[in-house]
Image 1 (cartoon, each protein chain N blue to C red):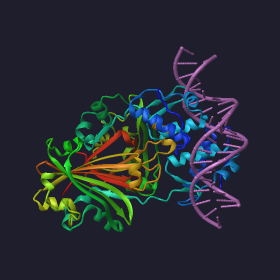
Image 2: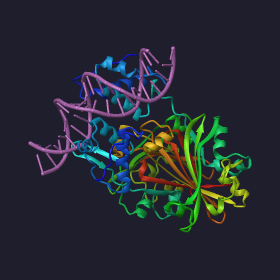
Image 3: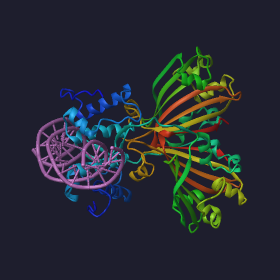
Length: 258
Length: 258
DNA sequence: TAGTGGTCTAGACCACAGT
DNA sequence: CTGTGGTCTAGACCACTAA
């Protein structure tokens, strides 16, 4: 492992010089995905600086998402992000009719093992925003279904669905297992005719809590996608608020030129 | 300014407790946009911890993009981002027929003064990616039109359009002013019948260069939107690669349930 | 000049992973 | 057990901003 030395004449502070050395080693290919960075002790010895200085250097690379620290093991060059393309086609009826929810469709296409955990189902009053989106009266309650999706054991998305309690209560939608095709298939079983969805996409930095839940390293933004499902009468039936690691996804949409 | 104290029994480490206190103060409205956070010295005094501990706490909020530190002045709650909703309707033909390009439509709706600068027009070979998207042969050239959009003088978006040279050369598309309704209106003038666009949306952290061009502070992600315009024969006529400050936008799409 | 954040030192104890 | 990163202390000097 070829590392330089601190140049006190350089106008960059030492921590930045160390960060630049490590970054260059990765770009050069001296360190490839999965490789362990020199330990903090080694960096301290090599550069002759205090521990906080090398930590600040490594923190820079963590914020850039280039390395990931594992407590007790070391700091590793991050494997390249596997980008998933999400076509707007993923909510097509034929998938539901084949018994597949959107996440299962994606798993089948991409070849990962899908899983769901941290499932929480509740019934109660709605926030003003959800009430507004579902066009509910002030006293109407909503069913909320919060869960986390995993691909090959790695968390990739968190989602919370909200439905009017008058629609979902008593159905399989409030069960742990919603059955084949998921929530939308159950709505169709109940006689609602799904017409279209709206999706609102934005991106921002996650809170510390969100970062932990998606096991994101520092410096990784998230995509916020809020989907609303409408039936053929124009009634909103469900609002689904999801969060994903942004760099891992490309969302695809088609827009008419009309 | 109401701050709590460190609870040594709490399983969260002190720096995270402090970060949570500050975050709560912002969420509660005790600290509003533009307000100065307590200085490091004040936080040290209030909590009775070392300086590195309060710095680590504040660093959390900086990484989340909620506050911004200014050397010599203090740390400030980030001013509210003016969120713009971009409906997929913004490329409707009627706007072009009214002589308005998409950005002008947005300006008129939101009430800002639109401007364009850093315009660069060039003709030359295409990158493999652009060639692929425009389905060009290896030797076909493209016209590229790079520009930056400003709202009330503030940069809000950078964009580069690519069109086959065989389509755009000699038209007003390679002039500084493309005329009323913009590029798409000119394509329709030339007899191309626009049918639909595809939009691919992702988000990531900007490079230093991109951050400068959009005048972003640290910790602000960007949305990457790549739009391709197709005519009624399915031929791709234009690819437009745009970059925006992520937290300032919500993109809206409609997806059929089919 | 006083107050602010930026960087750094030289230690310390802890929790976690692997032998 | 050893080695790793996570957190913390109690100082220091510096560069920048504003009065």
